[in-house]
Length: 243
Ligand SMILES: *Cc1c(COP(=O)(O)O)cnc(C)c1O
Image (tube, rainbow, N blue to C red; front, side, top):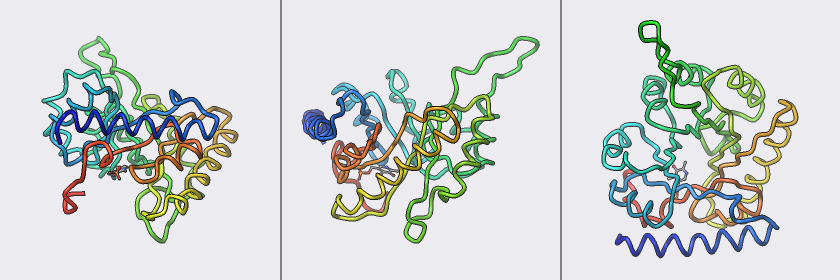
């Protein structure tokens, strides 16, 4: 994909985002576009950055380790959105600004520990900043594997809030893939309801709802998404085998 292709794709996506926001009486600035760069080379990330994208997401720690050297100079925010194995948690905590797919208390603890200030001699080297995390909720247990069950959400949220290096931003979901976005809409609505109930229970705001991908982001925005994760509509098609 040429850089003009990415810039042109971005322009169209932003237009559609603005229209969806308008339909819901929201301001377009409330919604962050996260470019999902998995399987695409670092040059595509740079092109998208030059076109105006400031958030990027990868789904594999190892793939990001291979690419990040080439784009480290970009002042962007880097998200992990894929399932994280516990043996990679420490690396993930150092290589990403946000982990949007947190679904396990043990994992949360490992991320927290890896992010903690390093004690060197007597001086404390402060860690850069807290790791922003989202809790991934499994809304269709029969169809998807990752994420935690709705019933376990409050307990996990409370554990995460007790960890000093983690900043609980909100919730994320990956609904089942359904061709018709209108059939995905109920999942988006459900995530927002869960967020509202959880925020009330915790007595603190949970601003972030990460939901909506290339084929359904408009419905997600209408239902309250604050972050949409866009891969193919921005970068083009991915080779199916590597998803
Ligand atoms: C790949 C991926 C996306 C982007 O999907 P597209 O359909 O290409 O926009 C979004 N979220 C997650 C978790 C993904 O793995």
